[in-house]
Image 1 (tube, rainbow, N blue to C red):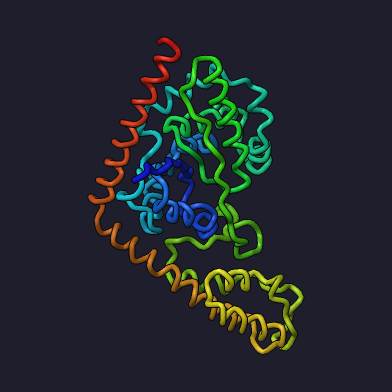
Image 2 (cartoon, rainbow, N blue to C red; image 1 turned 45 degrees about the horizontal axis):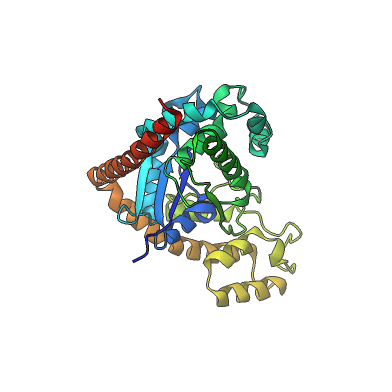
Length: 328
């Protein structure tokens, strides 16, 4: 049997995961477990780059994200699941890579500039924030993966990782493969107010939300802004609720909603209630798995301990190669 190619990806623990996180990354990770050797990590050190003044929530968010991952279908039988800060070798490789990474590479990173603008309420003029891509490079190449599954907006991070790996290999010899960018398709899914779904905007539907919470959030969703009354014909293509229907409702229901909306045969309130039923049906298996793991905290602890051990073993082998290459 051919050996599976290894992939790696991670998430920052900044709060419970929402539908945007699920469809943007987690759904693909669950699928990839069947075709790749998977390493998935919770990037708690990365959370410090923007939340260094108030780090108290990071540990709790780490627990939340682990439950979300297991609930969504990541399994220790198919994936190595670990916490970044538990593998101290990441810090050592970050230090070594920081010695060889030119500062202009970091300053030109488009994600760096975007984050500075988006998080203008925080002081991000720190070495840790500027050096974020170097730590991310260390996280990735530590496990010598074939590729990194990311959305288009994260592709620059993988590209700078490739450049750093290439520079290390040029200086010290071929230690690291250059990871490929594995672009994953992300369906159109905005928040309840039609902005990007985000915890900070208060427009997110979380994987851990109760059926009642989901129904309440759906009831407040923005619809076709031109449709003022039920008797007005609507345009489903500009309606956020219809985008959710296309993801969660059966095809025949989607077609029926499209037709009835255009003919003013269904109002927005009824349409939202119908969509909420199918969205809750989609979330029910995730909720059921979450309850299973919440009732078994010892099992969750065993899963993350075993994952940390496997990751640490791989990281130590890599650092042996690195120390040999740099003759230290």
